[in-house]
Length: 102
Image (cartoon, rainbow, N blue to C red; front, side):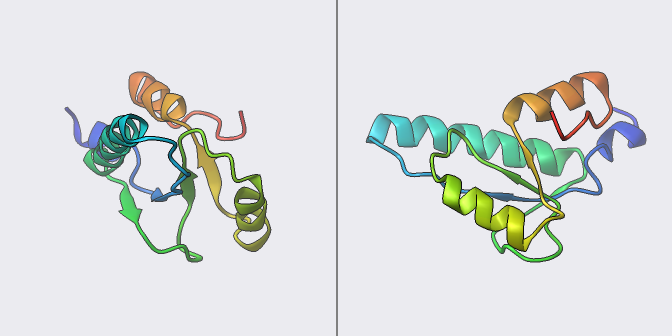
């Protein structure tokens, strides 16, 4: 791994938006995925926080159904881009940040 690769997400400060989980099996699966996502962001130079503030650049969620929460965040924190696990993995694969608007 080159230094450039390790800094791929260096300008990202991400927060995970917890969605409501329907059952224990779903909770375990999502918890593992969230840990992987957080680890990848950190491994590639980004930061993950639990505090929603003006420094947060990106938010990620897995099958969130609370659109009111997303709309509220978009209104109050317009700098935040919402990313998906696919965006993260595709950016790593191509070794560049992909378009965050797609």
